[in-house]
Image (tube, rainbow, N blue to C red; front, side, top):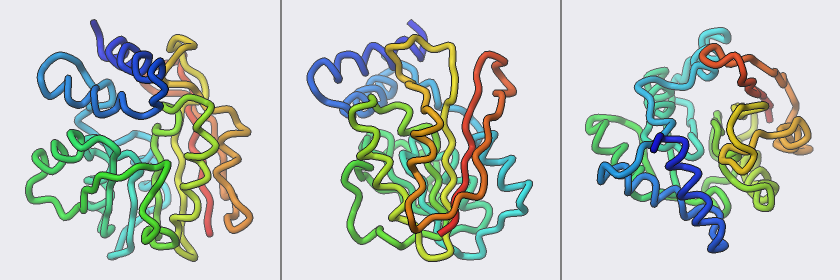
Length: 217
């Protein structure tokens, strides 16, 4: 069974039990035991994040960054290397523990937290928030709630970067469940100004298209 099949198997069982997010922990735990694969466990940060940062010559200079649903830390480590004081969270305790173990000397503050109910102290705190391919892993009934939590995490003058699937060859029962343009646009709030919303063909898969969207507060 491949990584995508592992994901869909565990997600289906979790959703059947009325639990939209419990499968994340089960996937990481099974992967740790050698019984599953995490499809996004890659040895490099997101291509769209790297390209965005290079194109805009982004540097952290000690500013605060937050990585939503950090998994095993690839994007968080990239932002830390750019000079951001980086906090990264995941709902999976196993993912967070593994990220810390993989990067023992990392300056990243890895934490266990739930996007559906983030710590109140995080509101208005971060100069950069990166939401990369997490909301697309949530079923449509809980998406609006998750999306509504992201924008308020930005500090005044901060930037929100959203990366997600726009079209994919994955089975319709997901995950992922590609985001519609309306869903991507809904990350914006009255306090945020849209900078760009791009549809970008995936360089590694010509049948996949991805969103990259940016807002400023």
